[in-house]
Length: 483
Ligand code: NAD
Ligand code: UDX
Image 1: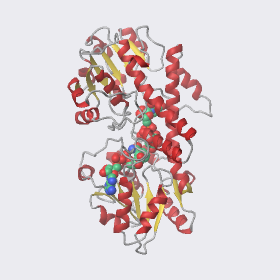
Image 2: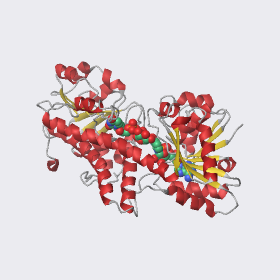
Image 3: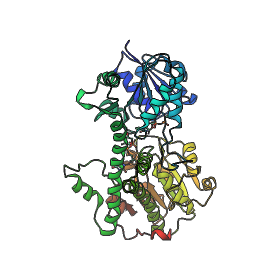
Image 4: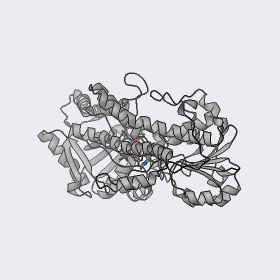
């Protein structure tokens, strides 16, 4: 057997990433550890804790051979040569930098534990997304515990996207490894490179200094989110002028300097990374005396909030300025298709907005549980920088207006309106004639993902709103201040 790896944090990143390493490197023992007992129990069961296409097969092929999930954190860290740290780094909700800065509590406690339990030299790999310069602080924590043990710290940010994690891990555009420019740092880089070289072509493994690697991750997410906010900003102008955002995106993306990907207008981006990482970037810029740069990136998040708010206003205003007591079907709750993850999903803001206007919601998502939907909608939204999203009502009382159902037909039965919030493939092939026949008239569709065939729906008799598409005469808008 070759080296032994231990990954701290068995989440959306730790689980799939380590499963792929185990699959591609049969000579390496991979232990994935977590403080959450239920999460580890699920990783060891037939019902994995996360839904990710292709993941089950890989876990089943490797688990018990060279891939192990355990809560025996300290022992397995102590035994490892390479320790990946893939714990959560959410936005701080209290204290200095609240609402923007990354909360490194979990990271710091993992680093202290590594320092405490280690009895041999280790390479410690930052897998979590962290503020640039975090490695400096981590190094101090690790070396503080002077036992003559050598720790080399590397930054190896993860670029996988949920829903396509296994493909992304199998054929990454690049693997990025940052390390110290010392002989020890270079040796550590070579050791981690050797792991990835089992399946990633050498030219796709980039090596940089520590700070470039840490910052590149924040920069990549900021650039990706910026494209979505740019096309979403254009979608508002398309609706105002009669241009079609899909045609505009196609024409713009044909320019090889711009490229066609990531230009789908939507109800807004969600997920655990984009907003968190941009706010973190904004905070870092502010701390480095760069308010103009901070302001530039903050706009990406603000346009995203505007887009979600705009969608709710379209629904309410089109349905004769009131949704009070009206049933509205919400199709999709996850932040994108092919995942059950609801972190920062636009569905939360849209549902909250409609519930606040006294709508009766019937929600359907094939991968998100009723319990999760209710938890998301009853949590007090953390709203430092989003004053336009006023939350005057106690969220738990709004749950009386909510039902979670098992399929799209049940959700739409007797409804006045239908909103597509997640682009699940199954929504494209629904029997819309049947849905129309069972809805109140006029029957409204609000397609927040531009996945439905508008012409066919209009032929059936629906009033249709689709983001950034020429407007149906029935579709109205309210001025922002009126909402
Ligand atoms: P997650 O919340 O799904 O998983 C983190 C896990 O770490 C949890 O199971 C938690 O119990 C565990 N944990 C926390 N502290 C611990 C400790 N001291 N010891 C042992 N376990 C501990 O988070 P995630 O989505 O996997 O994200 C992890 C990191 O990767 C974050 O920094 C995130 O920004 C980054 N990232 C996420 C994605 C993504 O698509 N989710 C993509 C790239 C990077
Ligand atoms: C993102 C990055 O893509 C990934 O590289 C990083 O490691 C983690 O963050 P993820 O959040 O999992 O991945 O999914 P992604 O595909 O980027 O989608 C994020 C959000 O943007 C989703 O809500 C998605 O629906 C939305 N989106 C994406 C759009 O609205 N339009 C697009 O064109 C693309």
